[in-house]
Length: 196
Image (cartoon, rainbow, N blue to C red; front, side, top):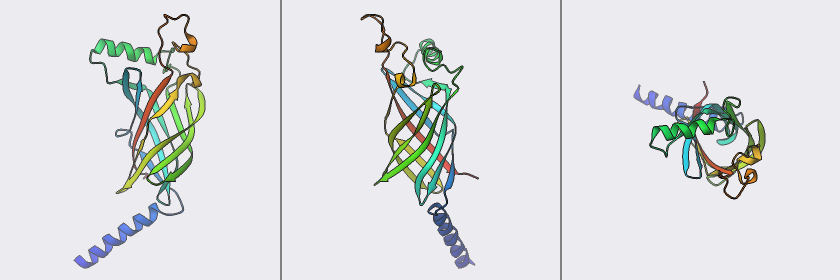
């Protein structure tokens, strides 16, 4: 009986391996509780939560997918004083910057993935503030025990490319104007499991 059980376990393992390396894509649902998008700009940093997402694996490699970021979920992790932190977040959520009352979500859809060694070069469409631009970045993608993990390198986003020029150098009225950097750095961290 024990011998038969071992054979059954080995067969199940083999079938799962074959499934993940098959021609047909296997879909993974993003675990929104364990995934996030970290951001940093100038002296401030924090993260966004993911609202939803899925990734596709074929022949054991990432081939496609998309995810949705909830913009209202933005947090700040560098300010300890609560009133200052709330003031910053309210400013970022206002129509001067993220305008979360109108643009609830930011989305990214993968168009192409090129795998070299242990890195995946991912290109796709980022829709932010109602504007869609193609971006490319590098990510490490790992697959173990039916769990997929993907972590991007730093991705530099120029907010003026998406129509936001508030307090930018381009919007400055004088040399004494307060300037907010155009570039925002983000890092995507995703955990996903096989969709049921």
